Length: 121
Image (cartoon, rainbow, N blue to C red):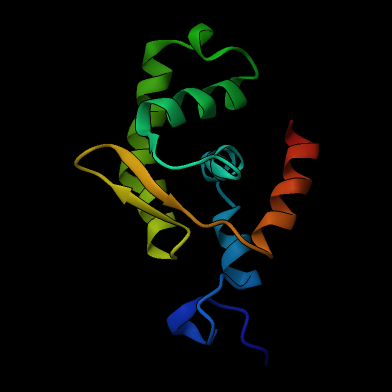
């Protein structure tokens, strides 16, 4: 067997392995969040990321997405998806401030994100 996992699970350099990448990309909000965060300079506010994810999710300008839907997305990002991305070392999320303060998206994740952006827009 090969070690295609994260940090403490077998990868010596701490990079995200293929199994972890596929797990991270299995949720569409996380896919949208990663696609939005890739290439952005930190810090990124939860509100700003929520607007970008909402725009991608509903394929329309964020201000056309209902406040209820944006609140649902913000809640999911804050409580589930951003902590998961922080857990694997892709971001640093200050939950008290509602800001992603560091972003480190590297291969193989970047290659998958390029393909996702071409497919999902």
